[in-house]
Length: 437
Ligand SMILES: *Cc1c(COP(=O)(O)O)cnc(C)c1O
Image (cartoon, rainbow, N blue to C red; front, side, top):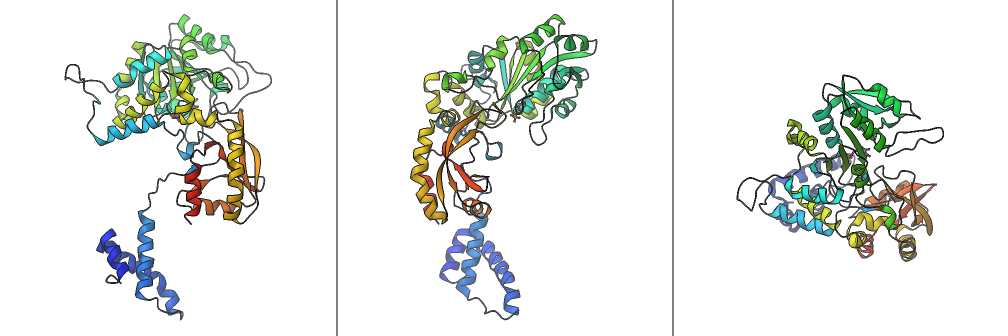
């Protein structure tokens, strides 16, 4: 089996030891059938099965997919797709030594934050800025640096859970600050904050209720007002924006979302937001705002445990630079490009792909209007009109699409499989992928 033509190829590719192991496993798997009377498989068949097993094991576990779910920033599919400029920068940083903490001016030590601080300050109007692993880390760090051992005042209506293990009360507990809830689920008033402030208060916090909306008899205190109450009491105020956008989305035909600049202007002492949500960069979390407070975060021991590596810093710097020219942003930043794609483009793509998919899947395929979502808790109730190929199959067909060399991920809804074409940019690659099987 090792000496046959296939065996020799497999040994050259995977090594003798791995191939011997795969042959043993193949024979062991075949043994029950042979004992029950089936024919003994010939040597080449065993070698082929062993080699196929080794090839399967060689496939990476983390693989690129076609995200046709209709959720642009899909957390389970890795959120933002990076701009080509960011990919280039990250690749170069990976391939070589880099000026991560090195000053080219004086040949001495530099700071890793230097690569993004000036850019973030320029873009947001903040005095100072640092970046850490993600926004959850940014919050833990800011709360630990400013609120450990004392109370943080938050409205009951903002004690959110953002999927999985991210629950605000748990985050606060892990940062060592005591949660002081004020107001009620639907209504919080300025006096609720004022009355909660006491000797033990460390800070006031506002949290963007990313993934839900309270409607009806409601009232919340605007961030600018919470900032004012904090300032009057001589306390800092943190505004956690969650997604956080650096541009006015209305400019691109989307619903306006409060920007990071708005939060700085409204008087928050620190603002936290994510790198891989609406910003469209790699996973990261930012803490921007008043210099003395940002520096307290920067010098906290936890910062070291949350810091970014050269690869992500390179990608972040390149992504942030794209924001210097808002006119070209929608063309260069994939997140914004997907969010602003005109429905007619998806419709035309659906018309081209529906017959191909019908033939491939052996089922009905229709061009159907649908609604895409932004995802990652940004504008949760806002959907974007789009077009899908709607296939008359469900679980089995979804599994077949997942089995393609580059898995295709759709959405099952109303007894059909929907492939929302908003995020499909490379149609030729999609077709070649279908034809590969
Ligand atoms: C998403 C989100 C977070 C967590 O951000 P990550 O970057 O995923 O860690 C925190 N706060 C709010 C309001 C969010 O929407």
